[in-house]
Amino acid sequence: MSSHEPEGDIVTGLPALHPSSLPPTLTVNSPLSHGITLRPLTISHTKDLFKNLSGPSNDRLYKYLGSGPFPDLESFTKFTQWFIDEPSIYAFSIFSSDKAHLSNQDHSTEDKKKTEEGTAISIFCLLNIVPSNRTIEIGHVLFTPTLQRTTAATAAYYLLMKLCFEDLHYQRVEWKCNDRNKPSERAALRLGFTYEGTFRKHMIVKGQRRDSAWYSALDDEWNEFVREGFEVWLGKGNFDERGGQRRKLEEVRAEVEKKRL
Image: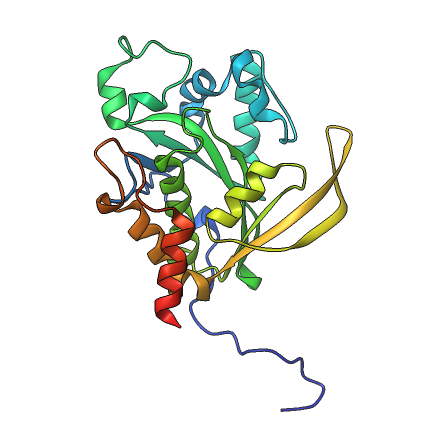
């Protein structure tokens, strides 16, 4: 090899696919998904999403997003339509079949068939999609409070990361957040991402400067311990009769990693 060639491992494996190659009717779920299904966001999901993500009690959900909150269905519909139309983003609706995840509605009168099939309750996206470098980012996370910090929320991330690594063949999945958003930073570490540093004065959001904390998970890590950590943690054996976890996700993943050494 010429001394003028760049150094680094030779890249192998299947080329990464853009998420737009996914069928619009795609449903992503698993026996481990705890009632959660991912579907590509469509405008037909908007009314249910607005119902679950709107109202004064949910205004805080938009604190670190670039827009929102939205006072009415019309403005929220423009928000979801932007996600659908923006070529640099691929958005998913998170559907849940668990009535406990529904927000701002009377569970006793909620459409039974819709709940059994799943109701659109939350959104998250893939962005900074660069198939040539096999890199992609999870972002624009908008989870209803009834989903946050639940087993089902972890299952949603498991489904999306599995899709990125195994179906779309990415080798690096990124996570970036405002470095003041400590819950997001804790979530990244809990889910198996590694902190890489903080980009100072990285963005301007709603007229304010944002320093961004960068995290990543790699395909090697996914294959060696991150995926198995999720799957063991999400398994029925890890939860008691009340649904409480017996071991933390970080503990399970550390055990898996230790076995691999």
